[in-house]
Length: 113
Image 1 (tube, rainbow, N blue to C red):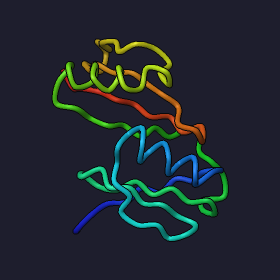
Image 2: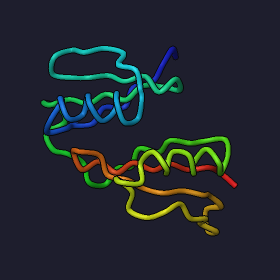
Image 3: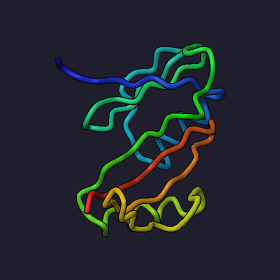
C-alpha cells in the first residue's frame, strides 16, 4: 500500500476548501472538480460533492497529536469551532476536544495519554 484516502460527502466544496486549507492549514493534494483531496502527511482526506449519497453524521475524523500541549495549541486556533475545551477522557486515556466543520462533519483532536 502506498497511501490511504478517506472520502466524505460535503454540501459546499468552497467552504470545505477554505476551512481545511486556511483554518486547519492542510495542503490541497488534488482538486478533481467534484472532489478535493487534502494531505494530512499521514494519509489523505477527500471531500466530494457527489459521493457518497448522504453526509455521514456517524463518523469522526480524528487528528492525533504527540502531546497535550499540541492539542492545546490546536484548541487555541479552533476554539471558535469547539464544542468544549480539551478534557482528559479517563475511559480511553486520551486528551481531546471536538469541533464540527462547515459541512457538519465531526472532527476530534486528541493525544493518547
